[in-house]
Amino acid sequence: MAKVSAKYEVMVVYSIAAGEENVKALMEKFKSLIEKNATVEDVNEWGKRKLAYEINDETEGYYVLYTFESKPDFPAELNRVLNITEGVLRSLVTVK
Image (cartoon, rainbow, N blue to C red; front, side, top):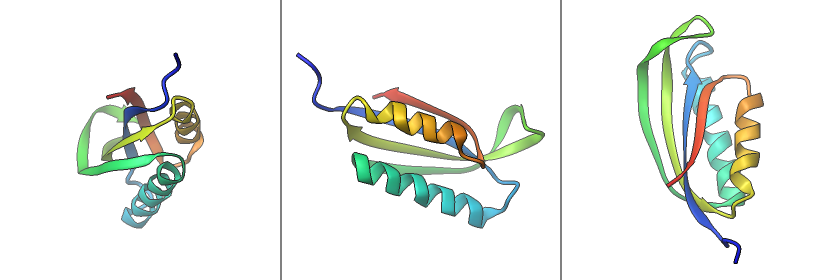
């Protein structure tokens, strides 16, 4: 029997090079995308932190953890959109 829905987490590291307004806009963009396709349980902003290693010549990033429940096909689409979005340094979608 196929799963109807599951709980997922996605950790996103946003680039702070373009400014704080750009980070807030990207956060809202992905929150609304998740809300359209899933049930958002929590958005946990970790804030600006030092990266373990440089990514695209940046040493700091803005971390946000989204927790949501959705059907199994949505996380792959979310991951695809995160990977092609300018301003996202890294992201990881996992089953909670």
